[in-house]
Image 1 (cartoon, rainbow, N blue to C red):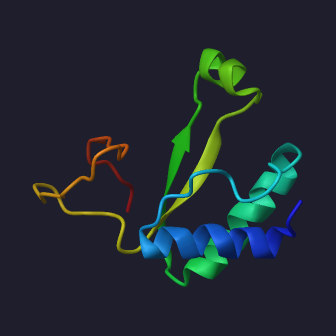
Image 2 (spheres, rainbow, N blue to C red; image 1 turned 90 degrees about the vertical axis):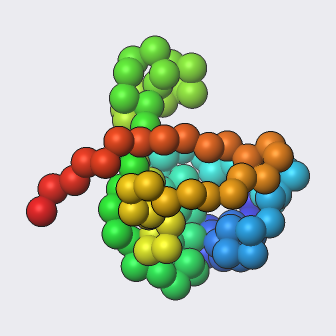
Length: 105
């Protein structure tokens, strides 16, 4: 497997360039500790502040489908959070989702 820092950098470069990866660029990390190390390396390589967190796999069924036993969190980077009412162009095949505005001060 590619070293965590190099893998995080590769993922960040693709994201910053708006480039979709056809395949995952390495063997997948073994376990959550390794996966979170790659996520941290990607966050550093993004060079943008983390402005929030998204949480997924909050139900036992979703966790079972993905082979984990807990919800997972991922960073939201500055520049990837938009004001209410903004219009965004999507490319064919893009994954889009809507989330109601919520937050804590």
